[in-house]
Length: 563
Image 1 (cartoon, rainbow, N blue to C red):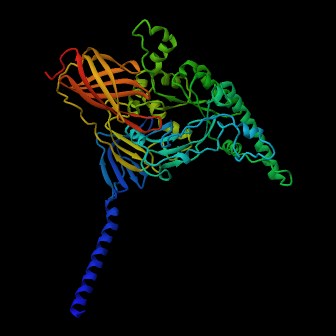
Image 2: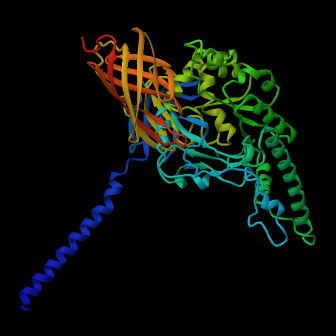
Image 3: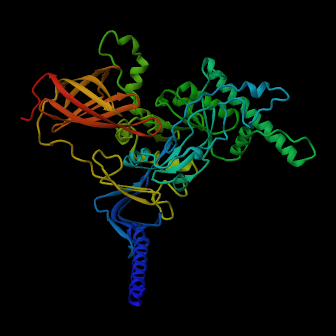
């Protein structure tokens, strides 16, 4: 090969290697330059540092996920990204005191009694070291079932939540919970604290599903297991003191409860009735524990009993739908108690607060967590103070779950878990503009204007409606009645007749709220002439979000076009 050709080839290779090196350096540098700064300054805002403590015209500095400074004379770091807080309010992001957020969907299976574990012969050793009753599994840890990328995190953030207790779902002794930050990523990144406390419930095998089959058997199981734990701990201590004696059996379930008993955190009982709340109080009293109870929303019916205990109530604000009394045929199924609970639902939290019972608030059970703040606002209108509501969503759950030193208030040294809105947390027109979750900044999109706000339409009449979710379509008839400002209506479909909880219209955007399988569902459709289209979303039982599309055509009633 000629020397000149070799020189050209060598030169070409050197140029190629150099170009590749430059590209690799550029790629390596690109992520670093694209990363958002970890230093933020929220300036000139109203700061609700804690319930009742307000600082006007103040600045909050966030550095590397922590609150570095709060006050009116704070120096803004030169490397900070500034968020103009003039006209905005900063408060501690809410903590959901009970949820299943971040957990993967259960794969089915049931509880019951493992007879083989009890009656195995000498040569038929049970392979496990757990409890023979399958509903007793306190060694289970929520951490083992957390997933990456739970879509429900975003819905909670939009409602102002920055953290949540993720609790085990099923069982009598259910296992231990974890406190999670509601941000994207791998569980190892968003778990704030593991093994918060032990959870208990009143599940049963139901008839042929195994033991126990009713609440009496469930409570008996709770008591027997606790006595077994005391005996297990005693024999383990004796063996540790005298290894020459026969080594006691190993039982992971009982060992987990021994370890939990050493932790001062009170157990959390999942109650679905006032009877179960009473049972939880009695079991806790028998074994010297201060119980935490996930309530039913009807705690005002047993205030005297609750006030004479040290119980903490997690009060859901999932208000019941209005009972259907539209016809004589439906009246026998509507009791006075049902009517009373519907009418007084919003007053429950205020009544609990007035009785000096420690409580926290949760959206647990709500199909649409976007309605959470609205329901809290209804509770405030019914007697709960705004400061008490904020405490029940910030300082109380932080204290309850042992994280008050890092969450619950806007203070230097704590995790940056902040909500920034256009007004106070529960004001009617407040919109959240920014969230800091575990130090990560989220800019919240302003609510999109749906339809033409200047249009004037008459939504009344009957509409043939098709709702489609995950490719499955169902037909229904919507009837809208009433007058402007006082519309009402109902939907009749395959599942029967459902009264709308509310019917409102803004321009040509019609919004109806109806009860769905997972709670209240808010659907907004845009009316154009004699047709409408729109959508809604609802959170499923495992936290996933479903989108529902609606198409409708008016079949009778007044003209509905623009006029």
